[in-house]
Image 1: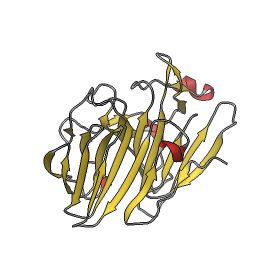
Image 2: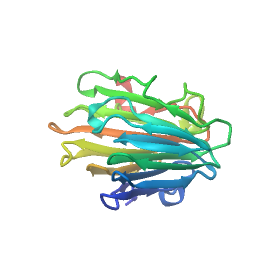
Image 3: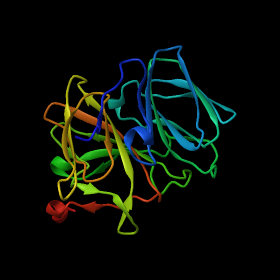
Image 4: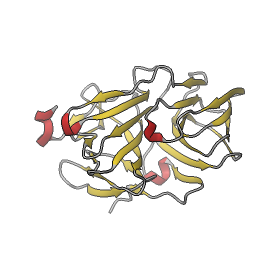
Length: 264
């Protein structure tokens, strides 16, 4: 069975480290740090560009030779306010120093040194509805293809109300055939409200050679190397996820599963 579901290492410090090598793909990396007030974390971007997402809490940042001050506002991700983020190009150092308990996501993909470090949000990010009925969810776009300050990364937040479906109708982006479809690897970092809840994510191909259905809990990550990847939030449990996508072309084009194509 493919190892698509990644449980956190623990509840403190670096709790996720997903690399292209560990995921068995080429582009997407994802780290997650859960820091206590007064703690710091530092890294070098190397060949990657990075988007640092303050999922919860506050921290001060030094990156790419600049001091960026304190970033962060929401203390609980389900406040749904726009996130504070920082883009750091490749071959740069960064440090985050927690001023409160915080959750910091590090989204990675190959970079080309074509862009300057910059703040992303909260200005310019607004919660928008997508879908209708039991397919309604709400999106905070952090860096999708209409933003031109990234080389490879596509990053967004999604809030799915209890009882609803998300990343649905089922779709895939696993072929390099633009403009029909693009090849994009993807990670889902999940949160649940209440935190003791659960959600469902399925990853499957049309021929069912890949066909995995996973129970996701608070702070789990699901890797999507190919295929369709819908999520379900059971009645009583609200779902959040942070998506990181990257591939050879920074475009998001997908194809629906044949049995749900009529819903698109």
